Length: 174
Image (cartoon, rainbow, N blue to C red; front, top):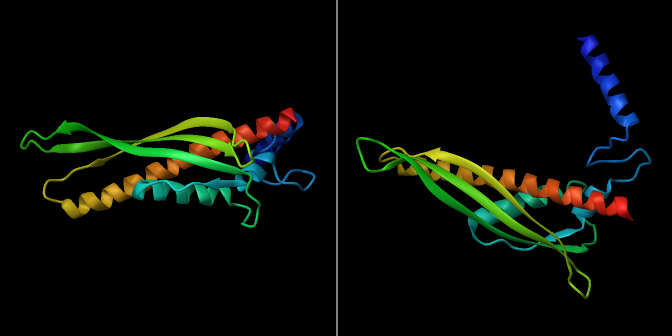
C-alpha cells in the first residue's frame, strides 16, 4: 500500500511541476481560483417547473461552495426541459415498459453591467431512464422524481464545468 501512496505522491508532484492546477479551491498563494470566484458571482434566474427548480438548486449548491455574501456580477439564464422516449413495449400489453428521459439545458451568462452583454453560452445534456411497471403508478411517480433529480444533478455538473473553464480562460487572457 505504501508503494501506491508513494507513486500517487510522485504523480502529483509531476503534475504540479508541469503547471497543472486544480479547477477549484485555494491556490498556493492563498487566493481562490478564478473559476470558484466567478461561479460565486453568478445569480441564477428562476427556471420554470419542478425540474427547473431541481436544476436551479443543484446549480446554487455548486456555485456557492465558498459561502454566500459575494457580490453578483453575472446573470445566468437557463432554458431547461426534459423529453421522454419510450424504448420497448411489453408483449403482453401495449404499455411501454421503459422510458428514456433526456434533459437539455441551454444557458447564457450575461454581464450585469449597463450593456447586458452575453459573455458565454452553452448546452448541457443528460440521459437517464426508468422502468414502467403495469399498475404501479405510485412507484412510477417515485422513480420519475428520482430520475429528474439525477438528470438535474448531471446537467448542473456539466454547466458548472463549462462555466468554470470559461472563467479560467478569461483569467488567463487578462
